[in-house]
Length: 206
Length: 206
Image (cartoon, rainbow over all chains, first blue to last red; front, side, top):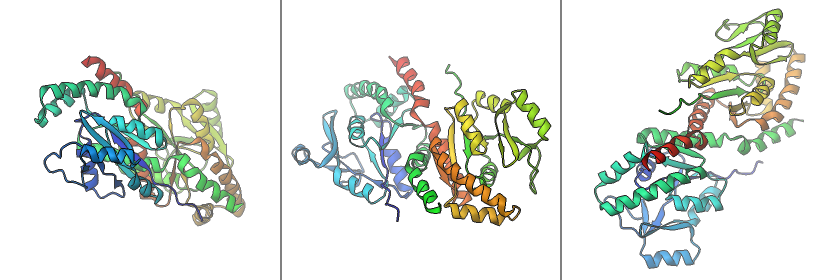
């Protein structure tokens, strides 16, 4: 019997406002075999966001307790709020041979890279920084100061692109979703993930 | 203006009898944007194969002249016949920014790897060696000696899998085609192919 292969840890990240949540939601609607990790955060829910679906909404005190208890794979403070990935569900899913996707901020993605270097790191990129600005302004809930702060952060984040395996341009949500699905399929075909299986076949036949 | 990116050179290879031609034909029927390279060979046409579509059928004398004139990207002698890839069309296609796929024997793939290390190398693998044997026998046109020779070659070829980027199992032609398409899409999203473009955007905004 062959050992059960571990699932893929897929990390989808990118600048604030690039549409990570929208793309991840659209991917989720397609009912692929990919599981979704739900982040914990101290930021306030936006309209339509549900506890346990989009995020686990926590108080600062609750979040800091999770940090202390080692219950987070990664966490970061971003524009005044904590964001983090509860570790248990991620580990269980991968060990069961299923793929799981994390939709997280770039600071968090960097930390996950150090713990899971074998993960598949996807950077969701805006067609241009100008369009990023337009999108943030279009959201209409942030002040000018917050927008400028986000732009500065975004430029730094694009410099972080070097640590990712893939860059998916979010020119159109459906196209971004198709690219992410293609990346997951391709990663399952990576030679290093399959070579063992075939070496076994040759041995059996000899 | 950004420089035009080069197209991808995709090399599809694998053991004799694994179904490279069938998979490549099915991919071709889907009218993707991928161009197809036509190999030259000295082997006799099988039923339904057309000159200039499946292969350029050559005499040994013609083929050896092409070798001498440096008109082949790679060539190999395989079970008594020459197979080779005419170089001009491959170069022109890539330089025009289009992707091109070569469906070639493993000996040829190794040679292409040395010339185009940046190519995308896909190994088409049988679900098992036993099934490979069944498929060759099923073809019904080869003698027992040729079958045994092919099996020995196939075992060696599976050892060659280590030089490929991806392994696509040909369990079902449609699935193999979908995996190859996914690999091409994913390769276009590889960070190293896109990072320059985004660095430029950041520079422009600064």
